Image 1 (cartoon, rainbow, N blue to C red):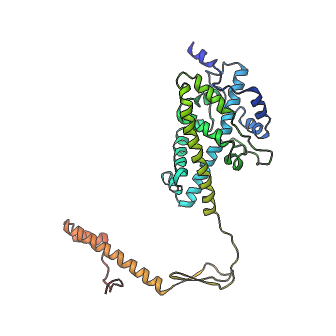
Image 2: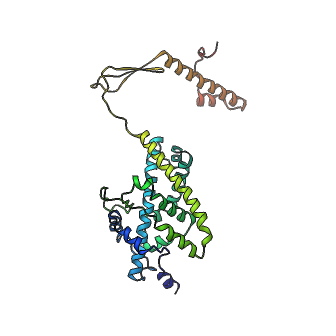
Length: 322
């Protein structure tokens, strides 16, 4: 009986029919719905729902996909740019490429997308995916933030239908065009507000709190968008203009001589300043070795082991001492 009662439940979101008609007239949203159609079937608990209820579940799932997938695409772009800028693939180091609110947004998305990958990709039963939106504060915050962002810069730069990762059997999405964009999606906000007010767990007192936090998240994601633009300029390949043959450029410590276009590589010649700096660096390393040897001697570490591990180099006159 409990399963049957749950299966006949309708979507928690009540969006006016007029707004849905306007949304469904968007060519970009129609393309997105075509790609999502029949990707996943209803679970046994929702497969007993009538056709109209299932159509409503599916439509609301498609709206959520149109809201969340641009955020997922933004995070993937930010991760790729961070990897290129930092020359690392360690996920725990990627946050170092950002600062301030952008870094906070990146960390938040990194944690949430890792834990809720199926929901963010809308994988699974359309009804379960839609109902899960009300499951945690993080789900609600991201949904509100995505709706707020849908009317701003995010959709202006990344508003083509984002299909997501459905595996190797899914064909490539069509090329973006001027008529293939997603419309703003603020319709979910009043529907989500009403759903929270009617929900026995959340209640009407939570909307103001959740909306304020979601607004902060959307502002942080906008900062992440700006940071991605800066990073993209940083890691972009420089223009490959042909230099004049045998052109010389003097840099601090180095004399850089360009060869003609037919030669390979570049000729480098160390100046006296560069040689002196390299020698001073070697002296610094030697001083550090001596300190380590002295500390180990006090600790009664065998001398043979010390010499093998740290080694000894011939003493030379210091450039930094009289």
